[in-house]
Structure formats: C-alpha cells, structure tokens
Image 1 (cartoon, rainbow, N blue to C red):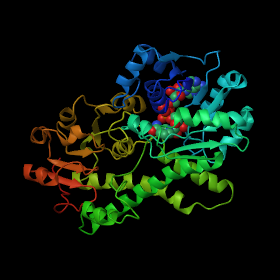
Image 2: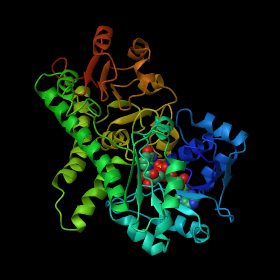
Image 3: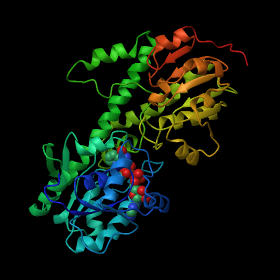
Image 4: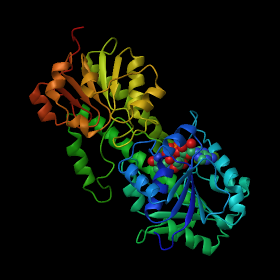
Length: 442
Ligand SMILES: NC(=O)c1ccc[n+]([C@@H]2O[C@H](COP(=O)([O-])OP(=O)(O)OC[C@H]3O[C@@H](n4cnc5c(N)ncnc54)[C@H](O)[C@@H]3O)[C@@H](O)[C@H]2O)c1
C-alpha cells in the first residue's frame, strides 16, 4: 500500500468504511470520509468513533491530527483519485436485499465518476447485482471495480492491514491504468491478489461467508451430539480439526452465528440459486440449523433452571461476538427474545453493546455490571465470549445469585473451577454434569 499517496473519498462511516478510511489514512493517503446519518456524523465530528472496534479510535485520532482524515456530510465537488463505496447492503426480514444505500451513494458520487474518478465498491453485493447496479447507475464499467472487504469485527484493523487475500472484481472492458491504481492503493504489498470478473468476486465474497457459516453450523450440530452422547466437544473437535483437509478454525461451538454478514450472505447465496432455478439445499439448511441452535440452547437453559416461567435469567453478553458492540442478527439477542417470550425475567449485561441493545429492545432490563445482572438470578447464561466474564469473581457471583447455576453457551468458563466453586455449570457441547434439576424451589 502507499506506493503513491492518493486522495480518496470513502462513502459510509460504518464498520467497514471507518476501518478503510482510518487504515488508508495511516498508510499515507488523504481521506475524505462521507457519512450521512446525523448521529454518526455528529459523533465523528466530535472526534469519537461511533462504534466499538479495538485500536480504531487511536488510528482515527492520529489521522485527524495529521490532517489526513476529514469528515464530510456530502461528497466533495473536486474529483479525487478514487471513490470507495462502503455503505450497508442489508437484507429485510424476508431475506430480500435492500440496495437503497448503494443506489443513493452512486447517485451522490455520480458527478465525481463522470469527471474521471475511479469507483470501487467495497460493500458486499449479492451475486449478480454488481452488473445490474452498474448498468442502472450508468457508471463507466471501465473505471468501476469491486474490492470486497473480508475484515472481521473485533480484529478489523489487523484484517484490513494484512488480509489473507485481496479480491478485485473488474468488468471485461476494465481500464488497465485504473486497475493498477486500485491494486496499488488498496492492496498491501505481498498480499495474494486475485483480479477476477465482478461476478466471480461476488461469488467469492458471498460464498466464503456462506461456507464459514456452514462450518459453524455443522460444528454446533456436532456439539449437540456431544451433549447427548456424553462426549466433550473440545476433544471431539480437536480430533476432527487435526485433519488438515478440515482445519481447526471455525470449529468452536456456540448456539449460533450472527452479525451483519454471515446470516445475510447465506440468504443471498440461496436467493441467487433460486433465481436461476438452482436448488440450494445446503445453503438453505444452514440458515434453518442456525435458528434451531438458539431454540435448543434456550431449552437447555430451561432444563437448568427448572423451567423459564417466572425464572430470573442473567444473560451475559448481547453483542454477536466479543470485541464489537454490534448486535445485528446477534444470537444472544435472539436468546433474550426467546427467554422473554417463555416468561423468564431477563436481566442482561454487555460491556459494549448495551446502548445498541437498549435501542433494539427498549423494554429489556440491562444492568451496569455483570454482578448486578446476576443478583437474585436463578441461572446465569454466558451468551458472548467477552473475557471479562471469564475473569469475573465467580465466588462473589455465587453469593449474589439465588441459585448457583451457569449455562455457558460459549465454553468460556473453566468447568473444573466452576464446579469446585460449587456451581452447577453446564457448557454447550458437554453433557450435563448431573441429572437435570426440575423441582427447583420458587
Ligand atoms: N461489518 C463487517 O464486519 C463487514 C465485513 C465485510 C464486509 N462488510 C460489508 O461492508 C458493507 C458495510 O458494512 P458495515 O457493517 O460497515 O455497515 P454499516 O451499516 O455499519 O455502515 C454503513 C454506513 O454507511 C452510511 N451511509 C449509507 N448511505 C450513505 C450515503 N449515501 N452517503 C454516506 N453515508 C452513507 C450509513 O449511515 C452507515 O453509517 C456491507 O455491504 C457489508 O456487508 C461488512
């Protein structure tokens, strides 16, 4: 990166846009970051990052101080070297892609592109949509590229700086000089780079996430088998993951995956197949399996608590995973909903995601500390793998709780330590330590 400092307009200051903007500014480029949501814009203009991502605030601050990062509410009029589109491409409740942010961003940058700027779409587009959108927006395909982002929230800056590979999608009439600028500016040196057709780039990006989702769901299914057959999921998955054809990553069991990418991209891959009459049996099944894993986890909590009606349940963690404040499609939030529907009194805690959770579920009781959430609880549930929960004073928690029962949905806690403290500790992927207590008092 940074063979030549460029002026770059980045559209959208979400997880991807902010990391892209701060990362490119740190690499020496001049960034003009455009955000249109008034709340996010005001926070950024006050010098704060409107989301939680480790290390991002410091990189952002340095870029602002050095004059390499500017916040705007609309695209500038003078043409930059590159425009990067990083807006959201969510799906609605029926799984249909909502490309309105992308459409409006393309209208906004239309004059810049007409002036000769090269356009790069970093947002994830569903399969088949790049060509459709480019045609609809009448952007010059010779200077329009895609560069799907593969970062993971929680390790986003590192992933941005050293991706496992870079994918650049181009149309058949791609201008080689524009392509060279895109690769030179956006791809760090020594990162394997695939320059492919835009449709191939779409299938790589969506297919990679769908494949990861599949691996996670299968892992979760095996964890269920372990629970029922008296096996320990760590031992089983270690035995499976040592096969180099399988590998040990994405083999950590939980009660489901979430976030803004995996569930969405599963749905869009399935939809892409359906549109051309291609049955997508496996892809379809993964979404269904994911939802069922949250229901099964709630049944396990009910078993541990001796029912849910009137039980007080402390849910520790609301973010879809540790290291982020993001609750989009969070399995923890879904578990909170299912518990509440079953009549439990839920008190939740999350070190970073409380504000987002309160906005989404205004009636949810959210405690300021984990201990406060556990006060008087019949059962505590580890729903997000935040290290702060592993490092809690569990002896104090035991004092605070009505019943010393923990259901660990992330296999975060040491079962030996928890049992030694006197907890009835039940980990997802391990059988219950003793027969289920069903006649609990109260
Ligand atoms: N979040 C991830 O981990 C991740 C990883 C890889 C790829 N992606 C993809 O990257 C894209 C962005 O994801 P995200 O999580 O950053 O989304 P996000 O919703 O957090 O951010 C999008 C931002 O764009 C802003 N925006 C929308 N239209 C705009 C416009 N016309 N002008 C200026 N700002 C505008 C929104 O207000 C919002 O702040 C999506 O396509 C997503 O699938 C996300």
